[in-house]
Length: 431
Figure 1 (tube, rainbow, N blue to C red):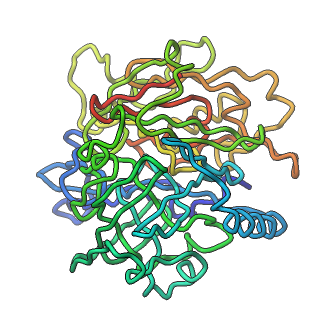
Figure 2 (tube, rainbow, N blue to C red):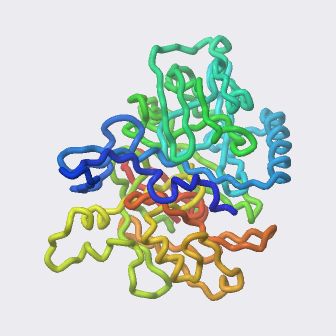
Figure 3 (spheres, rainbow, N blue to C red):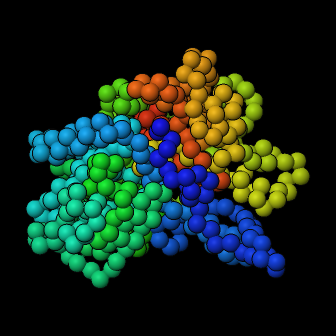
């Protein structure tokens, strides 16, 4: 099942690492004053609790598991073929082709060092660091992928800095260095800091992770180790025609891959772009005001009704729930949100709120869901929020609960829209 990817412990609060305050009797108590996204330290999303206590959200990157043995064998063979033919896959001046792995994730290629050593990476809007396997790493995940060789680059600069990053699924640790990073033929960052891993957990092992590393597309405020993010480097080094990038992710069912264009975007979408503001300077996060079904008036976003309370006085937890944020995340395989909203959504369409399964014959009678982001409505049709596995005949919703407050609009949502990320003006366009 596609939904069986995140560990069972992650179902409700894996995305939240909260330091809690204890009452006098030892009972845990959380006092949310204002749940906001404010990057102060590290590559985590921080929130303030009562009495100044702070908590952390892990960097998203939720990857599904569940490839059957035959698919895994085929993927290993396919990856081997593509890796061998990498040099035969030319990149345009500013566009990188992204390979779709069964709608689990997309990866493209970069070159690190001089001469460039090639790595496959996930271009991830939900993180801000660049990392590839290091030569000294002995984890199985490293040994199964390309490893960066320091001595093989004439421009590599070492540093004493070390780094650790905890993702929604997955953990890496390593050493920080600086070198040339080539994203496409015309897009080269001359002094980009990146991590060479010395440790990677099982999340990044084959056959689950066909990619070598990650290329974070978030802002510097979301980078672990106070490292300048590559998108901010692109702007500062003036290597972009315009300070933005566009992403198109095609569904596997349509035999589609994806593409990311730096410095411009597909102008055929210009007249249809709806622009929404970015909240904070960490990742590509915006506000979330509601979830609607069809033409019904009910708002399925839990706590959203509290915004218009007549008295204007809200309990602290209600205030937190009413000020939701949503992250547009190319590195997460599903839509992740609070269990209250998702249970109500599943129940409304006749899906099992625990397993996510829904009888396939009802799909024809379902209506679209509308997500209100940045004050604007974005629609997903039933075939876009329901996954139909033709091999098993099972249909399932494309969402999973992990956090009460931060929503992660992963691949099912992003496959529905062409997205443009404006680095300078901190806004996102969807068409």
